Length: 148
Image: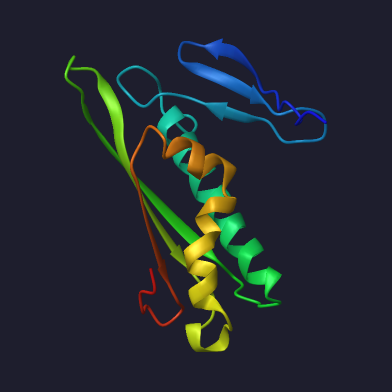
């Protein structure tokens, strides 16, 4: 059986603003470049990439913890993109720092050590992006203690 092929339709609205249509029943977004190219009326492509990686890693962490019947909610995530120039002097995403935060103290979660070893491998987007862009992933609990 083949995997589904997600589709997204983008329609230029004006200048660098594009309406992003994810399909029936899903809210549309307006993407836009920041000044001086665009007006900053919506997330930039880099922000959308960061959101996709952060969302997928958050989902994967939740999935891995729930496999052990654990309740880490609410999970939060902050993704910071490093932008710089490559050898051809073109702007590129040079790396993504992903900081995940559990909604509870780690002491309340069983098997956290096993989860932290495996959860990134469940993330389709993060693992795919990591093939070309370095990802640094950290995990903290609700007390601020770092576990990965």
